[in-house]
Image (cartoon, rainbow, N blue to C red):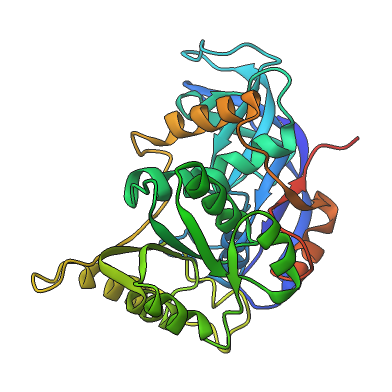
Length: 335
């Protein structure tokens, strides 16, 4: 057993005080697992929704959050021989990444190439992996299409924007006005979400071939209204909850309505809800592809903010605020 520091959500609450950094122990890895010294963990709206207890299909508190990590293997258990101690790996975990040491099944580990920036690599595992799956596999975005991305300055939204542009699509979307100049410099057409001008504008230009929506609830309906006759809405979150949009709501009815809507025999429009899963046959391959793109300089991953593990409450308070674009991380390892 090795002593570790880790984050624990002691109970579900809107109050960040339920987040504690505690001392605990990490047991040796079981057969088929490796033990990883975590460098960085991802941080996103999923963490906020987990703290509130409204993330779909989540386990009960107490729990340690952290949807993904990059870290160095310290020990391999019996039956784990793909990696050696000292190898740097990326893992989609869903839980437990906000801890100094964590045991994970070896089969989910992806080797991080030498020379790759570790902060950018961490952002690929969840944020860019989600965007890649939606853009390349759900919507199958192609050259000449118009796409609309809610949350262009967010971690997944920014990634979706850049991947769509690499596919040759024209990108429109919503973002905080403080980030519009920066997004225009990246070739996007940003709108303010709240005034709804984007709805008429998109309808007037014939609609979007794909809309990527992390907000959920009423936003799914609005996204549907700006599609082309054969377009697709890809939902990937219900972050109106974590952005403080009134009282927290159970997201399942909103998600179900979105998915069912796409099965209408009287309409060529499509809809789906994208849920990232490490058991998906494309997950590890997508991470490998993104790491190769990063290594080759085909993509650059902006990092908006990094908090130390001890400042986890500040991360939750500040999520969704501040100027800038890109991913947010928790620095787990001590200097």
